[in-house]
Image (cartoon, rainbow over all chains, first blue to last red; front, side):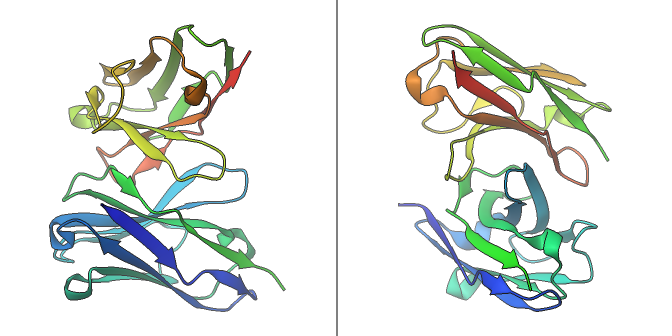
Length: 119
Length: 108
């Protein structure tokens, strides 16, 4: 079964950091582009970062550039998002998603991990 | 940045009716790189359509996508109870990837 499972979310103070992880199984991880998409409470979807299969292409939305770092470990079938300097407006559910390499739609999604930034 | 505007914001229909959802782009989307997703409360989005008109794996044929350039449509031919949800369009033809604000499909 194709599966993505996120972890690492939680409650953090403004300015704090977290490391989100996504464990992939059931498919050839090293042939897919992977993305992080977030959804603030009651709001729509925002693609904040993606990384190509070989890590040759990494994209960040302006809203997270310089604060978030995405990486992948193909040997461990894992995806990561280091989130630093967190702000209130980073509060959201963070989804890990898979897509065909260099085609940036998402055909498999995890269930998400919740990040809450609050003092 | 390509802005996607979905209409209507909310659509109220009954089971068995036909639903037509619109997604309009602020500029032409290259190669019809447009996708549609369905999201139910408390769940992750699910891919329905990619490439404007190709159904994703396992998606029933009552869902169809059409359009090109700046105007795209998702049609659900006969609504089933499980189709009532929020629908998002997404363009992936140019950076940054953007989503529409969503159309909520409610039971009338």
